[in-house]
Image (cartoon, rainbow, N blue to C red; front, side):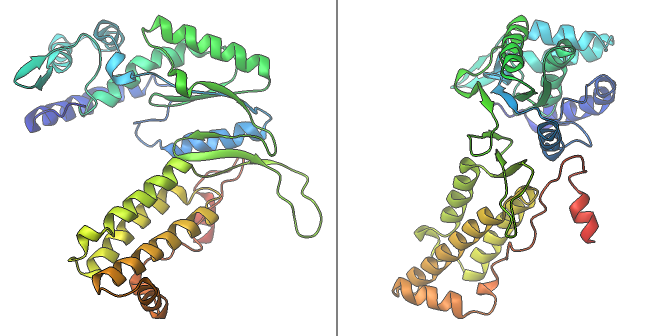
Length: 337
């Protein structure tokens, strides 16, 4: 990753303001990443809706080294389809040719858009729009968030054809799917699921208390990677090296992280994952207190559980808004209000 100088970032932001509306007019509904008024949860809702319609064969992949592999010539050709101003085109070429300072030497590549650049996500979308455009009429429903991509299909044959088509289209663009993350998944009750945009997605058939359920639906909750990330952050904020920090400060930092993390994952079937994460935070806080006062761990747990509000640690209960097919993902929250 390369981070441009501040003045370069200001110029890139100005360029983005100018050209983004031009390309937004062309971008297709299957694209969600780094676009105004579109979010990861909009993309996730498509998975819920399409699986409910019976599309339960899923091609999952992402573009290998997408930001580094996009050829400059192809990217500028895509830009020139909609932009003809020479000075603006020259400025974009300068961004791409800027290079990276490494050990006193400037290295200039002929491919890639710097991931640290303000305008780079937009340029990546401009280039990958060619993939979206060429996909029209192909098998399945594509959902692309930047370089992460899934295609939902009705049958195994469609999924195989979709993967072949996808590989061919990426090759035409000078790109290729990441082999380690490319596979076809059949969503079945009790079968394996897939990870996409931080969530693990799996088809479930809920068992009701009074009788059996007659439907299946695509449930989602934080993936193992997302759960591990939460544990790592909590462990970092309560590690031994921070024992000199006031307990109030540590709790405040934990709350900031937990609110942000849960704010994203609340739109899912995440209640059990939230309980585990909050319990882990309570455990780490108890151990932190015990170590800070040089007391046994049992003393730390006693202090935490005797506290009326667990030392002010935020609760994650009651904030989950499970998604529903063919309903806006924000609807459950608005309904409560």
